Length: 190
Image (cartoon, rainbow, N blue to C red; front, side, top):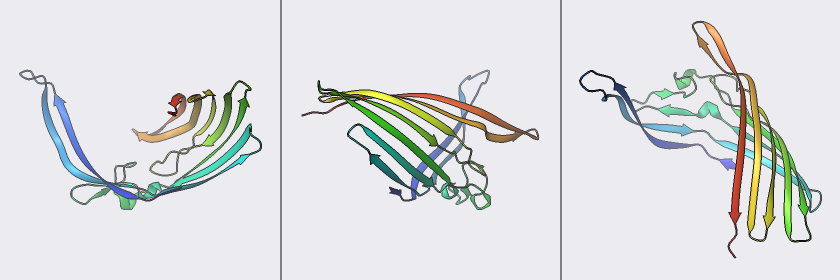
């Protein structure tokens, strides 16, 4: 898969609401301008291996060139969204995601099937410098019968000492633990 870089027209408006004695909802517009967001190119490749009707495995790698992600203000100034500074002085690096997984498909004589899936992944996040490392696991299952497909998946994603910033000359980082549940229902019309 390949996604080319492209520019998106955006409009930025910043409004501040001030509490005043005579008017508690007074607003001040401090910015109102058209901007351009340059989204970077990305590409990936994947492989799948079906060992039988019931067992399959896959692996994919995906790279995004975040060093080419910037916003052009109405005055022509290019800003790096990760640093808030000049794009020409940014040190943002690309990210490379790696995912692998497998599926076992229980196929019944009654006409329904139940998939059991699991996977591992490396999913770095772009920053102002080196990408933050995130790892994850996923588990899922579902139920397929006739025209109905139901899927349910759980994902656990974590990163240690990520999203770093300086505050009062101290380096601050976070340990992130994310739990996500995904569900889908598909009906195929005949």
